[in-house]
Structure formats: structure tokens, C-alpha cells
Length: 244
Length: 316
Image (cartoon, rainbow over all chains, first blue to last red; front, side, top):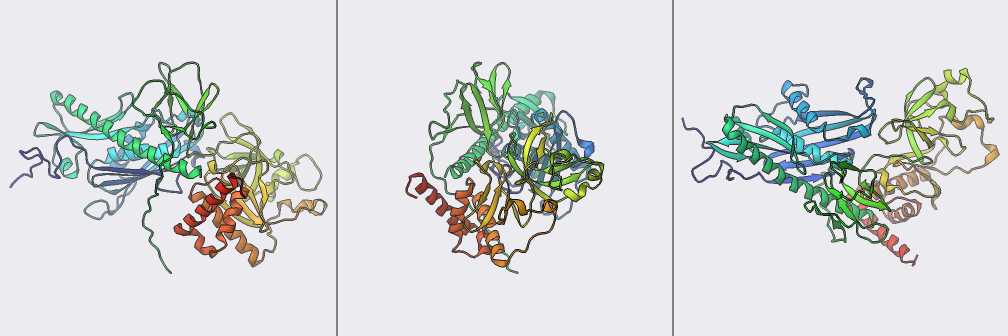
């Protein structure tokens, strides 16, 4: 039985990337007309679509908060997103956990006190899955929120980092995630460097932790530049059209 | 049924004089007022606008300690004397007092209605803020309260004016004017709110004989032209739900105007009565149904921008 080599002696991973290389990112805001804000993002083979509605009138009276807006996050996987077709219900425990993590990530970032008694809905759908759920959900939601004009204190950029054969690696894909290597997801606010999400479900030695976390943070900064450029380009386009 | 799959289209970007505030530089930026020159400074969330304490912060900004005014939305910086604000490109409608808006009733309560006005919260229309039928100004009675659905029921469209704001930001509407009230005999279309410009009046009649009511919240009502004859209006009919008879040619014109407005909103062009009439004239060579196709939308909007620039140059 041969164990698949995640990192070969030349330093290349199974998809040909180097250890500290991000997957190719393509992103675009304003892809859905009917939503207040939307974004489409691809990180390698993982593709995700996010839509933001709001701030708007809350649908359930029980969710009204008198002093700030209520934030609601829903994540779903398309049935064709994985290698095997499977309809995953929105109320599945794992998906609810990820949605709750995304909601907690954005709660300190969205300036919700500006909109009392309203609701901000964030709908995220994963169209193709190849590793890195939380990171792509957070990145897509950030772009969609900014596209919707919801005031946020900063971008939230997320990235995964792990350890393969004692080498810190950046942006794990599905194969690398499944093969038991420690994996860390970190989300930061790029301008201040503050961490708004840090999640790890595997074991990582404390000595290695710092290098992996730093690598993840650098990855986030790189992703921030790409997302910012995409938002600026789209703004330029829209302003051009508006001004004749 | 002919199903069409449209491939994604990418816009051709011309290089325009738009300055980008570079997010990386931390020095104080020289801000340019949009009124004075064509160039605008665009900022994204988290970007420093200025550290100078002499400026007051407006909408779209926040103070990151210790004294850095930072942008919270993606948009253009606007400066009026000492007030700096950032206007986001896409945002929900936030009204001013006196704005004309079109809304749809979502909820009926004991003495008021909740109206969807494309804003962050539903607007409120109180029973005391409407014109009661009977022609004479009178106080509302308990009978009126019990028959509140006779005036407006769920799903009705109305045109109203913003009267005031509640503390939490919800708008308080009123229809105390013969021009305001329930809408009939027409078709509804919704566009992004920033595209509707503020004019002296929002009730327009186009040269083709179709009325257009432009709500500042992005909701637009296109209807058959009603001749305003003051004394003959039946005062009890202001809340009637019956449409008048509308013939086929008027229906086609209404549909054409709606599709022209839709085309303008797709290309992010400003909307006022002159531009709508340009778009209507440009659309006359196409069949009404074809006006939703992307290439025809492009053609119409190019013609409209050509006419606008001719108009600006003073030729038309």
C-alpha cells in the first residue's frame, strides 16, 4: 500500500504547487441582480457563490433586536458539488456549525448598530467543493457584504494552512485535508491584523503552531489584495457607466 | 418554448480618469471634491481617509482609534467643506423628509399599515396620515379603523411622501395630497435607488401619452395617462381597486416604457423623464418583447448616451 505523496522530494504538492503557494483565485462581485450584494469566488477548484440581502425588514418578529441588526447566515452545498451526487440538507449539523462560525466571524466586523430592528441575510452556496469550506465562505461573504453596501470595519480574509511532513503548507485542497494532516483556518482583518476566526480540528504541536499560523496570515494578506483589486475594478466599471 | 442560454459577458473597460486611493500608503490623502473635476477618489472598507482631526465624519466612515477616519463601505469620497462621507455604489434607499416614494403594503395593523419602500425597514403609514374618502377633511372614526382594509389592503401599491423618521430609522409616510394615494391602471418596475435623480416633480407624462411616477426609492410606476379634472373626481373612488379600461395600444406602450426603463437600469444609467423618452424613442425600432435581450439593451443605451452627450453639448 503506497501512501500518496502529499509533498514530493522536489517540494511540489499533488497539484503541482509549492508549499507556500495559494491556489489560483478568481473573484467577481455583483453577479446577481436580484440580491442587494453578491459575489462569486473560485479558489482552485472550490467555487462558491454568496448573496447578501439587507439590511431589510426582519421576517420573524422574534429575531428583531432593538439596538442592532440581526445577522443570519445560511450555507448550502449544491448536490453536484462533490464527486458523488448527494443532496445535503441545510439543517445538517456540520453545515449549521460552519454557518454559525461564519456568523460569529462577521458579528464584530459588520457595524450592526447602525441598523436597529433590521436583518442582514447572507446566503452562501458552494457550487464545487475541493477543500477549504470555511475560508471560501468567509471570503465570498466579505465581498458580497461590501457589494451590498453594508458598512464593515474592514475586509475579512480567510485562509487555511497546514503541516505536511513538518513543512508548513498554505491553502489545502480536499485530498490534503482528508489525509489527516493538521489543518488550521485563520480569518483576519487585513489592515489591523486582528484575528476574527481561528479554527482547527486536528492536532498540531505547539512548537509548529506559530509558523503555521504566520503562514496562514500571510496567505490572508495575499487574498486581501486580490479581493480588493476585484472590488475596485468593479466599482470603476459601474461608475463609468453611471457617468455616461 | 425556446430556451436561451446566455453566456457571461464581460464589459469593455475604457480607461477613465478615476483616481484610486492606494490602500497601502498611510499618508494623508489630498481629497478632491467630485463637483469640481471629473476625477473621483474611490475607497474600500478599512482604508484610511484622513488622520486630520479638523474633518467631521459623515456616512460611510468610522473612526478607528486613535483618530483615523476610515471608510466602512466601498464607494466614492464626498467632501463638503469639513464634512467627509463615503457614498457606496449599491445601497438600500435611505429617505429624506419630503421624498416621494412608491411602496407596497405588506402588513395591516390596527391603526396603520406597514409599507415596503425598498429601505432597511418597512415604512409606516398611519391611518391619521391618509385622506379619508368623502371629499371633506374629517377626523378618523372607529368605523374607519374597523374597515381599514377598505382603504389599503395587503399587496396594494401606493405613492406617498416621507413625513418624518422614527427613532430607529423607519420612515413615517403620508398621503395627504390628491396626487398621492393608491396606484391603478399601470405596471410596476423596480430599479436601483441611486439611479433615480431628484427633480422638481416626480410625476411625468411622456410624449407618447404614458404617465411615469418615479419613486426616489427606486420603485417606478408606469400607467395610462389620467386627465386631471379636479371637480369630477369621485371622492369615494380614490381607494377603489378597479382598473379603468385600457386598450391594447396603451398596454403595448406601457410595456415598452417598462422595458426601456429596465434597459436603462441594466446599464446603470441615470433615470429621469428626458432619458426615459430618449430610451423610448430608441426602442421604437424593436419589438417590445425583444427589448429584454442584452444586445438590444446595449444598442438602446448607446443611442441614449449619444443623445445625452449631444444634449449636454447644447446641440439638441
